[in-house]
Amino acid sequence: MSRLVVIFSSILVVFRANACPCERPEVCQQIRGERDFELFVFDVGGKTWKSYNWSMVTTVAAFGKYDPELMCYAHSHGARVVLKGDVPLYYIVDQGNRTAWIAEKVSLAKSQFMDGINIDIEQAVEEGSPEYHALTALVKETTEAFHREIPGSQVSFDVAWSPKCIDKRCYDYVSIAESCDLLFVMSYDEQSQIMGDCIAMANAPLSQTLNGYDQYLNLKIDPKKLVMGVPWYGYDYPCLNLSEEGICSIAKVPFRGANCSDAAGKQKTYKWILKQVNSSLTGRLWDSKQQAPYFNYKDKEGQIHQVWYDDPQSICPKADSVKSKGLRGIGMWNGNILDYSDEPVSRQQTAMMWNALLGC
Ligand SMILES: *[C@@H]1O[C@H](CO)[C@@H](O)[C@H](O)[C@H]1NC(C)=O
Ligand SMILES: *[C@@H]1O[C@H](CO)[C@@H](O)[C@H](O)[C@H]1NC(C)=O
Ligand SMILES: *[C@@H]1O[C@H](CO)[C@@H](O)[C@H](O)[C@H]1NC(C)=O
Ligand SMILES: *[C@@H]1O[C@H](CO)[C@@H](O)[C@H](O)[C@H]1NC(C)=O
Ligand SMILES: *[C@@H]1O[C@H](CO)[C@@H](O)[C@H](O)[C@H]1NC(C)=O
Image (cartoon, rainbow, N blue to C red; front, top):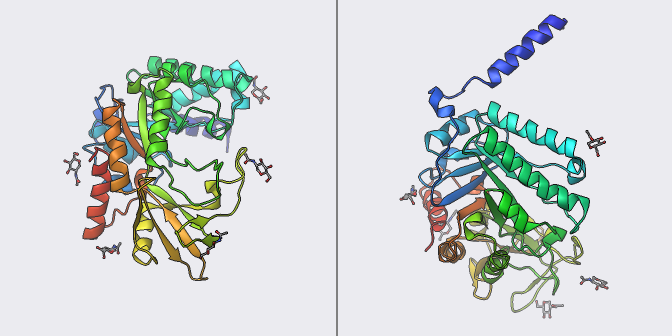
C-alpha cells in the first residue's frame, strides 16, 4: 500500500470507530444514573444476551469480542457495558507503563461507547511487593481516569471469595475497595485450595460463601461496595473411589500451595448439568451441610463422576443475604451458560435462575 492509502485508511478506521453503531445516536451516550441494586452480568460472547432478563440487568462486563449490538441494546435498557481489564502486574509496576495502559483502556472505552471497566487481575501477589503497591495504584489511577474522562462510568475489581490471600492473592483489599466503585466478589471456585481430604465438594458452600463476606465486612469495607458473584456453573469430578456414603475421592492436583484442588474437576455449564442430571445414577441429591445440589453419573467408559453445582435452591439463601447484609447487588459467572432455547422446560428453568438472584 502507498503511504497515502495507509493514512487514508487509518483516518477511515478512526472515523468508523467513533461513529455510533446504534440506530438512534443518543443510545451511544454513556449511562450516568445510579441504580439502588446492582445486577452485574459477565458476558463471554455469542448472542444469548438477547434472552437476558433486561428488567434486572444493570451492568454487563463484556468479556467476549466487542459487540456493538449488545452495547446499543444494554444502553437502551439503561444498563452499562464495561470493558475487561487485565494486565501482567510486573508490567505496570513502572508508572509510565501503568499510565499508558490506563490511557489505552479509557480511549478504547470511549471509542466503543462503553461505561467503565472491570479489572480482572487474578494473579498471585505477595503482600508488600512492588506488584502489591502497583496493583493498588492501578485501581486508583484507573478509577480517577475513567471518572474524569467518562462521567458516570463505573470501575469494578474482581476479588476472590475471601480476602485471606486466597490463591496467593494477597492484595490491599481495603485500599482497592476505597478507590474503585465496587468489588465483584467471586463466590465460587471455593475449593481451589483443598487443605483437608481430597474429595469432591460444592463449588460455593453456603456457610463458606457467607464467611467470605463477613471477612470483607470485618475489614470495614463498605457493604455498598460489594457485589456478590454466584456461579452458574458447577464442577464435574471423576471419582477415584465412591464410598458407600457417597463420598467421591478425587485426584491430587496441586494449586498455589495446596495439594488438592477443584482443578481435578472440569467446569460445566448449568445448561449441561440439567441435561446430565436426568441421565444420572442418582438424580439430583441435596447436601444439607453445604446447602448444595449434586449427583453421580457413569460415563461411556464406565467411570463414575460426581457433579456439584448451584441451582435456584442453593442460590436463593445467598441472594437473601445480599439484602440482609446490605450489599450493593448480585451477579454471576456467567450470563451465557443457561439454556436459552425455546423449549418450555428450559425457559422455565432459565427464568427460575434469573429470579433466584432476587432472593427466595
Ligand atoms: C514497561 O515494562 C516493560 C516490561 O517490564 C519494560 O521492558 C519497559 O521498559 C517498560 N516501559 C517503560 C516505559 O518503562
Ligand atoms: C471405596 O469405596 C468402597 C465402597 O464402594 C468403600 O468400601 C471403601 O472404603 C472406599 N475406599 C476408600 C479408600 O475410601
Ligand atoms: C502436601 O503433601 C506433602 C507430601 O505428602 C506434605 O508434606 C505437605 O504437608 C502437604 N501440604 C499441605 C498444604 O497439605
Ligand atoms: C428432566 O427430568 C425432569 C423430571 O422428570 C423433567 O421435568 C425435565 O423436563 C427433564 N429435563 C430435561 C432437560 O430433559
Ligand atoms: C424478569 O424480571 C422481572 C423483575 O424481577 C420479573 O418480574 C419478570 O417476571 C422476569 N421475566 C421473566 C421472563 O422471568
